[in-house]
Image 1 (cartoon, rainbow, N blue to C red):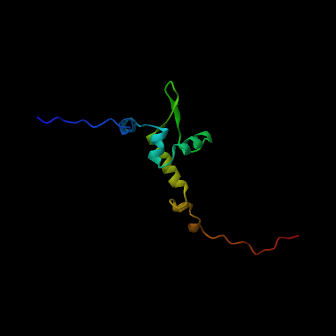
Image 2 (spheres, rainbow, N blue to C red; image 1 turned 120 degrees about the vertical axis):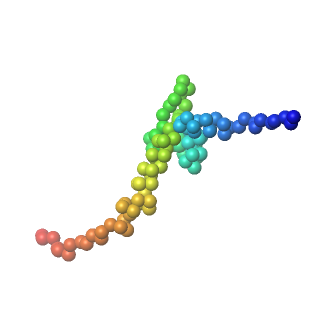
Length: 103
């Protein structure tokens, strides 16, 4: 009978486990968003970007996957290119009054 080889443990296993659990580390959240971990750290320091929190006795910074998804949707809605109601091109043109103010 041929012997079966098991796949080598990799870093993807903990990431997949965290993804299933709904919690992501800074590294995993950055990968999920297509950003660098440094960007997330800077945003957190400036109180910008997606919501995060500290978890566990070591105080690891974590992100909820659903919070990241909600934050992405908020970014899409705040961008006039994605949200046509915010586009200045769809606004009704405003005309200035030709009336001269009285002195």
